[in-house]
Image (cartoon, rainbow, N blue to C red; front, side):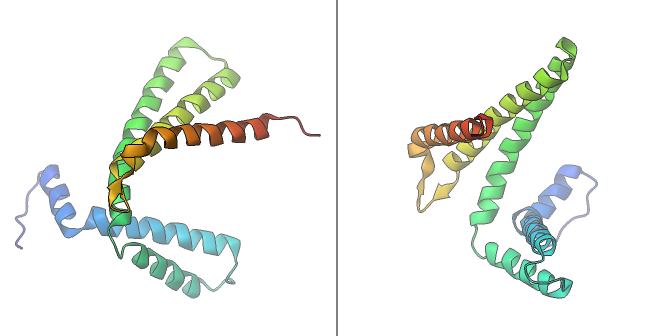
Length: 161
């Protein structure tokens, strides 16, 4: 396929999409960096960076063998961008209202937790799992996530005996 050189950002991004930059290259780089960083930091395979890089590359390439990762990333990151935009607007509005740092941290934690639940919920709703859409059962999943989140908060905030 011949590509025409264009100065339009839209055209450049479309060419990159056609070349697989967003579906394969960027997910591979993200998985490679995470696996390499985790293996290097934990030193579970020693300190040989060559071995760590080969294992990280193999994991990254095997993760892209099927389109699950590309579909998941293509679904979650737009929702995450929307969530970050909402958090930014909340930050601006909160800056106009209060200067209490402790309250602001807890408010943003709550807003971020709600945004996280919605991002994960809508991502699971839109990504096909095992041949069907999880969206058919996303309300029980949301209740389960809220229950687990409540349990984690109760354990963290509970008194030590």
